[in-house]
Length: 158
Image (cartoon, rainbow, N blue to C red; front, side):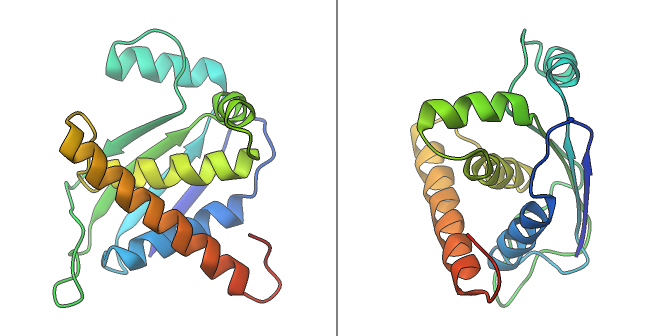
């Protein structure tokens, strides 16, 4: 699996943890090991520019996803073919404000946003109530599974 992460945000985050999370999520969603995904952490100004340019909405947002090959989750019998999943763009400064509001650490918010962005790359959406239930249910399962996995991994804090 090729997971590239570039932190241009100026915020110190546990980049290795985000890479482990993506690898965990992709494995659980039966995505081919040769799939590629990129993550970029940006500052508020860069996120605002992207948000206006691509979503035609003012102000910064927490996460944007840019799917490439329109890959979908696979199954144990039929993993997703190799390909380019796309890009996830995160804004740690926006995430920090949301983390404070939610009462949890920044990394918890970044894990949530990373998984959320990855699910968007794989075709999930939350525009309709049924879609929202499916996407957020899977998001919760992946985050809980990752937390359990990290807690069981020697030398790693969750």
